[in-house]
Length: 257
Ligand SMILES: NC(=O)c1ccc[n+]([C@@H]2O[C@H](COP(=O)([O-])OP(=O)(O)OC[C@H]3O[C@@H](n4cnc5c(N)ncnc54)[C@H](O)[C@@H]3O)[C@@H](O)[C@H]2O)c1
Image (cartoon, rainbow, N blue to C red):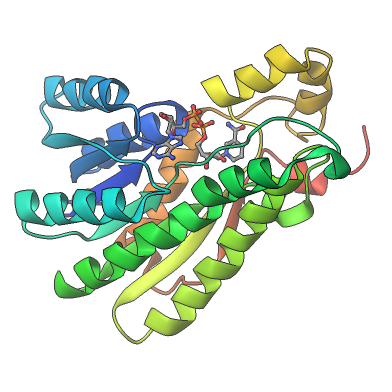
């Protein structure tokens, strides 16, 4: 049986940790050649080495997704190395901390939005022509339940993640007849270093956060990666402009049962 991403060239940003790391490994196990982008090159190289040790084909590239020059150079390097680009997960983001809406500085707002929203747009700017030149493909941008329903104490991040959804739907509309699908995955709480940092800053939030999921547990990074891989595959060939909540029932759990 053909694997989900057989013969595809796939890239993931923020591939050096958490959901991005699991996505890189899932892309490989689903048959893709994998480009792992991260601003932390050592982390990207560690994930590349894990893919190669598992018999896969991967490259690691350093890029800050908030930098036009970095993103353009990284995507040119992928196309140069593999000769094509078919499938991408724009996953890198920066949460920036936890404060009431009135307490953020303009600088903090800009920094968070530069990575979390502008960074996705910069990736799309270079990915879309590369995917089109490769004969078509698909994009999954990682939003968040916070981008769907808002997130107390994370206004710049949740606003940026809502922007990622609108940007994805716009790309879906513009490219529907040009061979490129674009969808979002909106994770609930996922067991990664990022959520661990949240629990370290606000320890009382751990049990409360778990309780907001109808399943009463956090998700595993691989559970996000599986959804991303499916949406990027031809098995999702009629799906575009969709937001797939992968959240253990967070959005259907307004009451504590
Ligand atoms: N973990 C969760 O509970 C959760 C929930 C909802 C959404 N998400 C989203 O999932 C995605 C991955 O989150 P995670 O929990 O795996 O995070 P993580 O912190 O474990 O990993 C993020 C990776 O992105 C890289 N990165 C950060 N800024 C970058 C930049 N400017 N350029 C390039 N690389 C950069 C980091 O070096 C790191 O390797 C993010 O978009 C996040 O907002 C996570």
